[in-house]
Amino acid sequence: MPKSDRPLTMPLLNDRLAVPDAPGLPRESGAWLVRLSPGASERAVQGLADRLRGRLLEAAFHDLGSGIVSIGAARRDMLEQTLIEAGVAADLIAVDTPHRLVRRDAVPAGSRVRVAGATFGQGFVLVGGPCAVESRAQIQAAARAAARAGIHVLRGGAFKPRTSPYAFQGLGMRGVELLAEAGRATGLPVVSEILDPSHLERMYPLVDAFQVGARNMQNFELLKALGDVDRPVILKRGASATLEEWLLAAEYLLAGGNGQVILCERGIRTFNPNTRFTLDLATAVQAKSMTHLPVIIDPSHATGRPELVLPLACAALAAGLDGVMFEFHPHPEAALSDGPQALRIEQLDELTQRLARLAEGIGRGMEPARGDHPPA
Image (cartoon, rainbow, N blue to C red; front, side, top):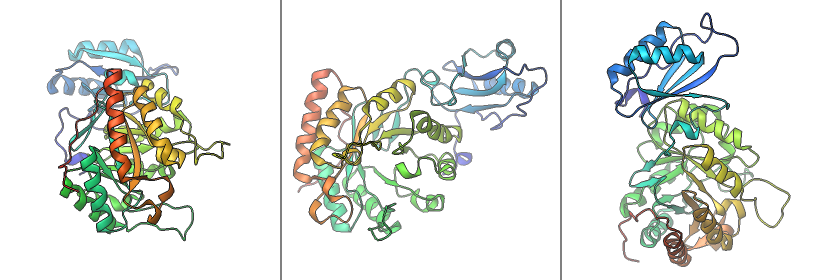
């Protein structure tokens, strides 16, 4: 659903107001965020929009927290006077980073992102499922196991970007349909990777969240398209991306109007040959402190070793992150994609129970289970 068709709690400031080269501004004038106070009326915000337009300032409203206005080059005294004239109570934040909207001070309390019944940024969330949807029987079995174990969101790939052109590429839209069917049968929300903006319209009614994979983290046309929909996006970090590049990829989504973004650290390429990649837990924690977005990890892709999933999930929970995405399969030895890194179904209960005990011990909460708990 394009953002232009959604009801707004606040009016857009004409999306972009005017010209960045406003007369009389010193060259060193920087960008600003105006963090509106809770309860600001639409009339007051519209009055602010009119005054910013009259001063030829580049500005856009974003429905983040209590409301954010992002402003291009402007002087502080001019903005303070404009707020007084508009009668709007707000905090002025000088932007000293390339990214603006993902900054922690945009939403100091942190954002919560709802994927159907699961809330990221509240309790610790578990996202699990097979690397690829292979058949109705396989994804139905995985969904039933996920619901029984208390997993909150079912994952499954339908469009698979593979290094080799001869590897299994996924079932395409048929795989998305089978995933959605399994989610409905078990009461679990579903997430699947999108590779191309042309898939957006057909996938939109079937998935509860989109995943942008590591290879597409800087697919800017895809990010722009996803910025224009009202579906959450799990944004994986590229295998060689810096923290700043990852955050600027998220900035594309927020700048486009989609504030429902979850960051996912899935490992970076290093010289270590013992794991598939190296889970960069330090950068995940740094992303959590620097941004208001929920941050999760994917230890399955990071390590390629199923025995490391549980300890790294525990580390993420203890470090204050918001969840873990991992892979499991009813029959890993027969999987068409990434079978060696998948947990077995019989290992799921140990994973969820160990995490629940750890959460209780350190004073953190697990997101409540949402599935229908079907019989085996």
